[in-house]
Length: 193
Image (tube, rainbow, N blue to C red):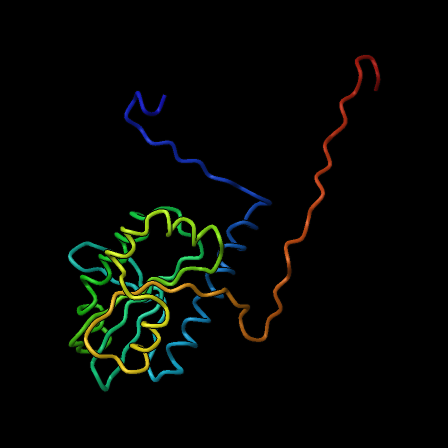
């Protein structure tokens, strides 16, 4: 029906109220924390959830890195799940296009603006990216090892993709979701109370 009408169908899954949102946010937060640690240990200044509004284009940068010695700016997009290529790459491109202005709003004057897409480690994410390898390689040709080398000694700009396992936040213990038993209500036979 949707195709005939030229419409899109958007489904929303709800699971135990907000539990699904909290689970996704916990995974995203773990990836952000792990990436922030990785960037800071190599001497970068880091800001998280940096909002912007440039020429009416709005959004927020998950992780914004600043390497003062080389005046390098890094726009980091964190995805616990890669649902589709366009929905992942287009917002990252917009943030990079406005990267210099976003950096300037924090008092940073970048010479180069680089980007990295950090994806949660997992077979589904790897398969989705492998299925669109040409697209992701064109947009983000550098990979994890090359990006880590660049991070330690940034020269020029880089466009990278790296996989990271999510990690619990410091000082917290992550609870496993485990199995949950679903109990169906019993059907009553006619005439029984």
